[in-house]
Every structure is written in C-alpha cells, then in structure tokens.
Image 1 (tube, protein in one colour):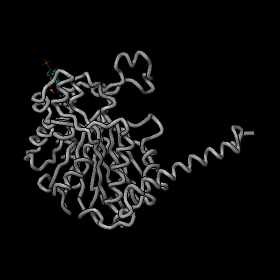
Image 2 (cartoon, helix red, strand yellow):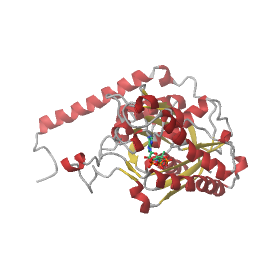
Image 3 (spheres, protein in one colour):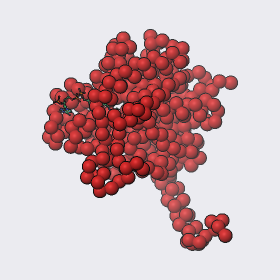
Image 4 (cartoon, helix red, strand yellow):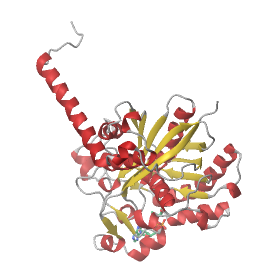
Length: 377
Ligand code: UT7
C-alpha cells in the first residue's frame, strides 16, 4: 500500500526583540529607504542573550507537536536544519530531542544553508514513505545575529533570528509531500560562507582579528544565482509530480529578498498574490524562513485542505531546491491529551528526565571511577 508523509503539525518561535531599519541606520551607514527598496525588509528579530538556536527550535517543535496532537515520547526522528548550530558537535537536534523529551527518537542536524529546510523535508518524507519511520519533526532554526558582523552594512541588514517546525506523519491517504528536487553547485561555495571556525581555519587570534567568523557574502553573485534557480526549481518539482503551474495554489519561497521573489514570479508569469511573503517583518531567517512562512500562511487563511503548495529555496553551498506539498490539515488537533497539560509541563518533565540521566551518569562514574568497566583489560 502506498504511504504518504502528511504535515500534521506546525509551530514557530520568534524572539520578542524587534530591530527596525531605523535603529540599524543609527549604528551603520545605511537607511530605511535603501533597505526597503533593495530588499523589502523593514525589521527583523534578534535573539536575547538567553535564547539560542536550540531554545528557539525547542519552542517551535513543542508547538508543532501540540498542534499535531503527538506526544514527544512517540517522536521517532528529529532533524534540525540550521546554519547556526549551537556547536560543531553535538548536533543541535540532539539538544532539542532531549529538551522536548523525544526519548525514542534519532536526531541529526542537516547543513544545506538556507535550502536546509527543503532538504530536511525531503529526507524526512522519504524515511516515512519507505516505511522506515512513522513520524518526524523537521525544524529550521537560526540565531544568525550571532554570526553577523554588525558593522558590515552589506550583510547585517539582511538577516534575522527565528525557528519553525513541522510534524510529518505517515498516512495511507494521498497528500503531504508529493515531490521534491534538491541541487548543489559547490563551485559557488565562496559566494556565501563563514570562512573560519571549522576544521579548515580553526579559531585563532588571527581569524578573530580578521573577522573571519562572520558571514562573508558576494551579494550580487548570490542575487544572480537566486533569480536563476527559483523559477527553474519550481518548474522542475511540478514536472516531477506531473502538475502544471496553474494547479498550484500557493508558492512559499525562501524569504531573502522581495526583489528575488518578484523576479521568480515574473519568470513564472505568476502574480505576486500567488506567493506568500513576510520578509518585510523577519528578514532572512535562513532555514527558518519557509517553516515560519508556512505557519503564518496558515494563520492568514491562505492554506486550505487540498491546496497544492510549492516550497522553494536557495542558499549557500550553493544549494537550491523545491518541494511540492498537498496540504491536508484542517486545523491543529483540538484536544490532544498532552496539549491540555500544557507546553510548560512537557518541557519541565523533559528537563527533569535530562537532569536524572546526567545524575545517573555521575553516580555511575563515582562508583566505577575513572577505571570503570570499559571492556579494556
Ligand atoms: O539566503 C541567501 C542569502 N543571501 C541573499 O539572498 C543575498 C542576495 N543578494 C541581495 O539580496 C542583494 O545583492 C543585496 C541586497 C545584498 C544588495 O543589493 P544590490 O542591489 O545588489 O546592491 P549592491 O551590492 O550592488 O550595492 C549597491 C550599492 C553599493 O554602493 P556603490 O558601490 O554603488 O557606491 C553598496 O556599497 O549599495 C551599497 N550598499 C548599501 N548602501 C546602504 C550595500 N549595502 C548597503 C546598505 N545601505 N545596507
């Protein structure tokens, strides 16, 4: 029997702090007019010192699980697509798995920059469609404010922080993720990168002095690339699934620049009202931009049961890709048992369980000592 990967829950998390163009113009040589005209961005969100990629991702994931009526204990897979992981390792997804109490789940990060969410959705949907997994939580989460040079006007005006998550569940009913196409062209890797902090250029006084831990971008090159691939990827994913553009109800593009979205619309000969755009309020939140836009599109009444929706993105790598969905969810599940008990309690229980596990490791180390049973003779 055919299996489908349905989207049954969705959630987002945004820092409360709003940073407007006017505020930015007080610290770098820019203006509200320039930013709005060239990008469409008016404001973005910036994480507080206590917020991290994992904390935003955890918030979004718990909301998505509540909407789906799925208990964290039932979750089988957690994927976090991110360009700003908490560490090189452990994976941010493992931290999220622990914090949401997904005790039976496998967890990993996926790195494909701003296209990461489309990549992650493709992986998760295939693991479900093959029958390997019953469900997955797919998250896009970023704290890009931590890797931006706030003195560089060519990049600091563009990015923002946030997270969005979807719950995918197996179903025998047609719908959900219908097709995807993902691509990469590593020859363009230097157009958008974080030069230092990895194994090639480990952190040193020199790398920090030279500002190599900040986003480095050739904006014009990325712009040209983006306007080439957005329309092409949309057409490709539709052809794969056997649909034509007139059968698509909504396109949710990566929110990087209003002009890039308009260029894609022009190439596809579609009016802008077939696109969902919120880049004005959040800037480019990389992997989080598409899932945040999905949440907002649903809240705005722009997603209905049966709608065909194209998600399309591009980013560093260079990477690009698209996914075609058929929306199947009416509204968040109204009275899931664990939802009634509240997100706070779910989070508190997960925290307590995590503490107990840490404690049991300490106790084990205390009794067995440094020379405990390691199997080594
Ligand atoms: O997820 C992928 C992430 N990256 C992207 O999506 C980036 C794609 N690229 C873009 O969105 C656009 O290329 C930018 C918005 C980054 C730049 O817009 P542009 O129209 O390509 O501007 P430009 O780079 O050609 O720069 C035009 C001028 C330059 O001055 P000169 O050389 O003409 O005197 C820049 O120095 O604008 C200047 N400029 C600014 N002026 C005021 C660059 N940044 C700013 C700024 N405020 N923030």
